[in-house]
Image (cartoon, rainbow, N blue to C red; front, top):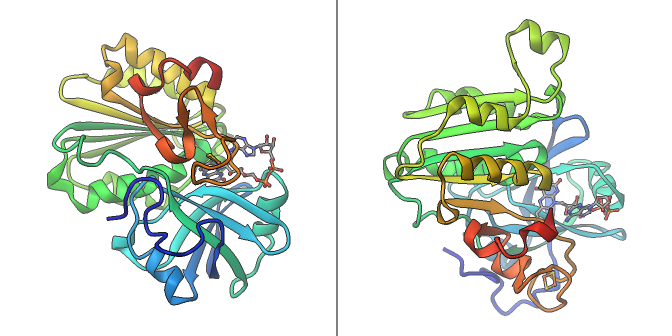
Length: 290
Ligand SMILES: Cc1cc2nc3c(=O)[nH]c(=O)nc-3n(C[C@H](O)[C@H](O)[C@H](O)COP(=O)(O)OP(=O)(O)OC[C@H]3O[C@@H](n4cnc5c(N)ncnc54)[C@H](O)[C@@H]3O)c2cc1C
Ligand code: FES
């Protein structure tokens, strides 16, 4: 497995991207696409031969710029790197316009990854909101691939609208996995969604209805800051303590390797100390993030 922060970078200048070829591209939701990238050169393949669920990488659109994205795949399921990318600005729009066969730059893997050892044998509650579901997918894959290492898995999946729910084509495989349940909700259901009996309401309402037991349990949350805020409050009310809760945080980043200070939050650098933090590590500065 790669090390903390700069895993897999070897002797290569960590600010220089490796070349990757776009080998697949499909819609995940409205203005959200899944990209499959294969590294072109041996050095790039070596960097991404092994990486942790929860790590991220910078992907660059040639001549436009680069941006950080959670790696949505796991190395155990194939060589191609996957990224789920929402179109929000110049880099993401340029990436969305690429065709299969075109070249991108990729540098990483970066960041700490999910605490797979610390949560072994625990019951796990995964809470994903909108595009925040993307970095959670390799976490879910990892648990399903090593099912007997972990306790019961409950996935709570949410988005503002049905068209913004990511990885809907994987729901069936999650639902049918041993000792695993999936609950999905949207803030605002479409006519079709409601006619099919879909849940409508915030993820906190779903959480309240499920009423999870904190005993031998951990939570992993990834979503927009406002969701993290209210989910954290509710988990506190439900009796979860800060050392049972992990959150993925986002920050504007430049270098991704602890050099520029751009992603600083309190005493932490999101690119090096995160992006995944245990609640008791971030309690001091989470208010400024929200
Ligand atoms: C560790 C990490 C993992 C990420 N993983 C994903 C992912 O898996 N999928 C995905 O679609 N996006 C992800 N992002 C967010 C992604 O990096 C931004 O959407 C991207 O940088 C936008 O670039 P742009 O040039 O297209 O838009 P810009 O023109 O730079 O910005 C467009 C809009 O997005 C906002 N924005 C840009 N970056 C961020 C950010 N880091 N946090 C909050 N708002 C931002 C800007 O304020 C602006 O309103 C991640 C960010 C980080 C730090
Ligand atoms: S992005 Fe430069 S220190 Fe984190």
